[in-house]
Length: 446
Ligand code: LLP
Image (cartoon, rainbow, N blue to C red; front, side, top):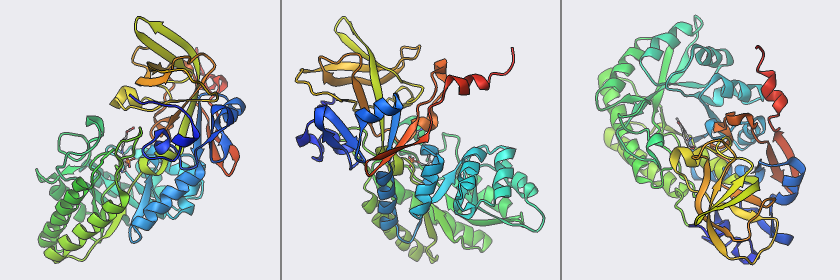
């Protein structure tokens, strides 16, 4: 259970309740909290709820932390965590590249001015449109995820052009916070297995295609990975494969991409991946492994998504109803699984906080639920909120920047919430609320 109360002495202490908030979070008069110098209560008033607040400086600072930890590597932001034009712009300004997995993400980024050569395209089943868009816009690297893609991509390339590609391999490592986000073993859909030789077979076929320029290997072992060890093991296995490729084909691959998946803490006291330790251990393994194999050290790419944007976001909801059933208390808010499906999908636990008023009421275990028509619409089970919680109260949920809105749905036609960027005391809408007019305008025939 998570005990939550907003008071000056709890902010900034580790692992106090505010340890998982953006670094700019401060207590404000009347139980309010400011993020990026903006009052959340005022933002809720001005923009309505549910509302997603994104701390621009936190995102930028996280990009800088990665650049500092991995000065010689390409750090590319995994757009699937959350993408809008402003975010594409921020990460570009901070010197990051971009990982996209659809024509949509790619087109949005490039039409915002993101340099296509700094973009990597992923996808276990890229559509003809994905591939055509990638070629048309001149994406830097395309990651081959199945043998079907090899001839398809080669055939789509205009005569006389070559496309840089990588091959996504499965290193046979189980890591990640939930079965649905573990991608390092043969029992899931991504990548080509090293164990059964599919990766080696794909590489032979790629080398037969003169317009495909194989520049390296890729892997992404999973998400919410809390320790460095699985990455080190992945590097070892991929360097081993690079050595075998050189033996068999006489080519030395110049690049290695080890994906993202770096864990963040969703609740105070939870473990986050130590990025500095990751950088040091990966660098050592890469250098030692390549020296042992007599290979030059390849250029490294990493692809963090969640750890760049997750902790920069705060979701703000109004309480609509409080229901006491037997010994259970349900606190229902004006959003739910349509803006945050993560508790329902992965059993992730959050730390909602009452903001906007002071109370001395005793904390009491409650279940924070959404307004959707199903019992599984739970945002936070078994959390402590003050006993006098009531309709009209504001609840803030930290670590809401990644895989909330990017996974938002149209369930119950509620409309997706807006995203407001905060920085230096100002707030601006990046993505507006989805209105009923937006929704009904797509529904065009009886
Ligand atoms: N690179 C590749 C190839 C990926 O597939 C992913 C995430 C990333 C990088 C970035 O991973 P991150 O650093 O954000 O963990 N919806 C799930 C997460 C799915 C991750 C999918 N791939 C969740 O809400 O936890």
